[in-house]
Length: 476
Image (cartoon, rainbow, N blue to C red; front, side):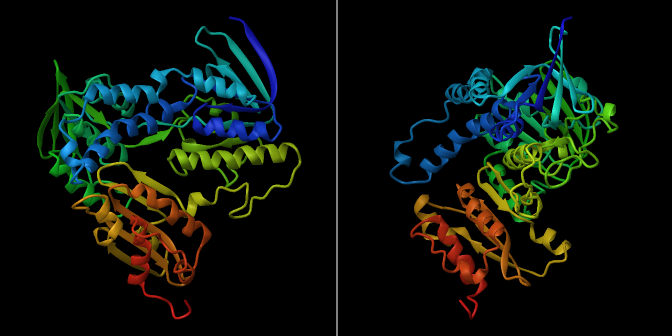
């Protein structure tokens, strides 16, 4: 097959949102940039994760809100239109066409080479297209790896042979199965349990430990209770022993008995997608995460960067995009001999990865959190005070729907007098987390937070109630 050779300033492997942001910031910084992609430009988030999953979840959330509000409830005469939900989901994935994303790359002045990109030497990437043709890209300054992560398939007898769903199949399914078993208790598992239960499937969740282990335990408990009230069977502290597909049914043997379903979704975590990148050609271990400093430069290299899930720092799209902005900017700065600000919280340092990571779980109720949990903060040796408040006691919450249920927690570092973490559980709490993130990143003193007055009557009044529960400092 024919081969081509090109030299550019920066080569980015992976054209998901992380790779796109690295390439865009570097191009804006004056670098000639090429991005390599073996699948769809736009990546996992656009076609199989963030966008389609939230499109599946949103209609049920709106319907639930309407049914909880007298006056609107009387206007609701039907249930979820599954076909309409799936059509809307498809529109958010552009029917799995990346034409629009490719046009954006062109408008941003970023080159695109389609195919599997592998490191083939120092500052060198060889791209193999579907037809076998190769393109050798040589980078004058840097190579950035932004290939994301792939689902983990546990070593359970019969599981692979049963052709289980991953998150990709769950978010792109053309029909809703009569029943769905989910192995796992994390974000993907809980969101898909919420979505498919609302779409009419009988859902069973098999969890080896507890639900939503990355957030405060009370959040996982409330989500579990809500899903069970909607008919979802959640089997906690349950081991999956074997899986077998026979005909149109999947039979799952667990430590608590047998579960049968039309389909089984495996949602037990993800690992960095580094197995087929040619890492061995530059002395790194294939399949392992790529450890970096806070400018996202791989340890031991002055030309190789790893951004997003591949570095294992934080497996969240928004945090990967944050890293990408820092990486793209610092690559351009180093290439152009401009000053580099890599001090903590500097323009070229992804400091928030360590201290202020926001996350939202779009279940019903939603979970929104930033910073460490109380248990994590204590394990870090911090002297903390935990302040809890019932969200239902906030006027704006009660106005938003009858029977509002929710909870809020604020974690204060007593030595410094600043909030370092917060967790909210309840309808629409996703919109509360950015205010908390701003306070954590800005290290706003508690006595100054008293002067950030929440509008009345909004759910944001929770900030006043948390501060009241904490107690006003004498200096405020």
